[in-house]
Image (cartoon, rainbow, N blue to C red; front, side, top):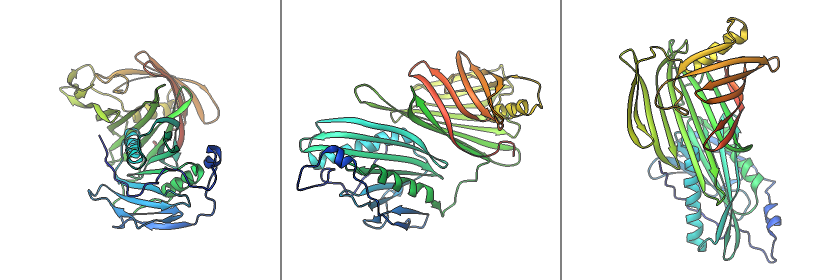
Length: 404
């Protein structure tokens, strides 16, 4: 999915003017320290939040109704430009799209960019909001420039901000975190989750992605489990690539699966969009797989287990309600094997400490080392992705309980 955005304000060169030449390290060290916090509200009062600094103009709704724009003065020559989007964007692909738009604006106002290089990719969480950040250093005929980007998914909204100026890195971060931490929806908010968690993904020990898991109760017998994943990678040539996935499972309270849908986008293009549904005593996987039509009927399984079911089984083993130290379940793991259900073998190992337990799991040829909590939820894991290298996840935020 491609996203279009128009910003009304752009710094002329991304660098502050001065009577004497200012070195790049001096410019990078600039910050704003005396910024007041003010309350802001969307034009139709659908949300409110706080910002640091002041509004260069009132918040404005976008013409297509997809979001609200803000231009914020943080004491630098160029303002910070933000957009509050309705709904959850694919964070990684959206960030690359918005980054390209920023360079289009720089080129339009300042001429051709001679060279550009990724300065930093980072990922994390602001409370329950997964966040990605990207900064570029670029060379113009007139000098060096810097553009900083941040994007987060928060409470059913997506927030994107950029700043085209050297320096003010901590100020930009403080502003973004202030907006996210204080964002309050005044329209119809999504149902409160039974359980929610956010994890950081590292690729070869570098923070590159985030994942969020949310479990909400539909009624007394059914739950909805949604997992969103976003990752940015860069090649040696500096080219950025993105992967975004959405995996939704509907399950019964005992963890048995009702049905599922899974979608994967690469560089903003939807390449896989599959559903798993019960059919004739088995299950059928159908939709688009790697850009091609796909359908397969599997009659070997009447019951499949969701990730909720796996966690509940681990809870019982940890609490001593089950003597089993090895748990074997059948489920659908489309991020590893999208064509059919697979067996997952989970071995509960030695206690890591009072509340954490070591686990080894295997799906096909993929072996994952993990540490889980008493909730049966993964707080750390490590595995090898044959296509890109060793991946490691670490839980950054969790609230609620799967046992409720």
